[in-house]
Image 1 (cartoon, rainbow, N blue to C red):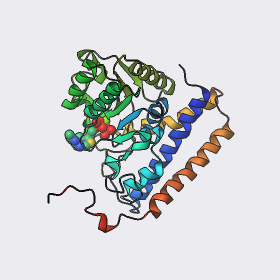
Image 2: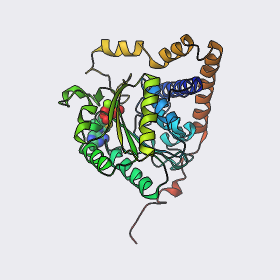
Image 3: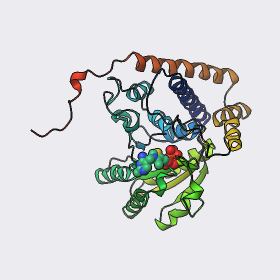
Image 4: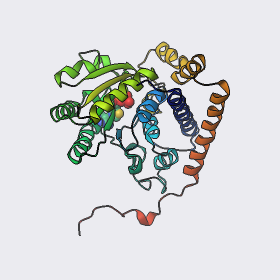
Amino acid sequence: MNPTPEHLVDVYRVSVFAKELDEKVQRLLMSGTINTTWFSWRGSELLGAVIGRSMRPEDRMVAYYRDGMSMMAKGFPPELLFAEALGKATGPARGRSGWVHAVHAESGVIMNSGVVGGQLPVAAGWALASQLSGDGRVTVCNFGDGAANEGAFHEALTLASLWQLPVVYVCHNNLYAEHTRFSTTSPVEHVVDRAVAYGVPAKLVDGDDVVTVWNTMTEALDRARSGGGPTLVEAMTYRFRGHTRYDTMAYIDPAEVADRRGADPVTRFRDRLLAEGHATEDTLAEIDVQALKDVEAAWEFADQSPYPDVAELHADVLAAG
Ligand SMILES: Cc1ncc(C[n+]2csc(CCOP(=O)(O)OP(=O)(O)O)c2C)c(N)n1
Ligand SMILES: [Mg+2]
């Protein structure tokens, strides 16, 4: 079913917030104000917003390190994510997991893990638990094009298909895994080209095309929920910044990056909402102002939160004797 105008404006709200949060973190990092491991998601905000918003609250998401936008869209409170990233005691793991392993049980989101591809079998396991308990939940698993080259991809897709698990695998194909272009590591052009080997329905989509991604996700979620098994979605997207903040992107043609940055999906979606009459300039301007305020509130919360007490250093750590 096509997204309603309310859905579309909501997707804009979530994606403009994710964009501003990423920009804020970038400024804090580059000015030396904070120091944390951060993988910028600039360029993929729309994709993340649609994935998170097309899911039901009770569904589960296994996310990955460049995926904060999907996690927040699913309900992970931004201030808690920020606090966890900074190692603060108010983070859901009391600052111990850092950004890369953040978990928020209430919204059903886990980020697993620093091991590229590690999230795919974990998602199959969560989906198996839903199938066995009959809880009606679907698990969505986000991963990158690089993760699709891991053995875990093959293992997870095989099991998910054999057991018809309620899971949707969403590959965020941003063309690069660290400094390596996907085309130099894959004999086939697209990750979905491999789906036939697993007997899994698959769809290739433009990750910036909100309506198509929405319809693809809702169809895949419905199929999983009604016992129809897994789906593989490959969403083409782009990474405006380097793999990490130290990456100068010397391995990419500067014209490619300039072209992509010049066609910011969030800005283009805003233009489209106006052109198609889904929202007025006043409404969107209000959303833009609120996004900046909400980002500042999340930052203030994280910044003012205390670090864990040093007495906690050995708490929850398994030790013999
Ligand atoms: C098993 C494993 N191999 C290598 C790495 C190092 N590494 C971290 S991120 C990354 C790139 C993964 O790229 P992709 O899956 O396309 O995700 P993207 O960063 O592009 O979103 C690599 C190789 C790792 N963390 N784990
Ligand atoms: Mg990638």
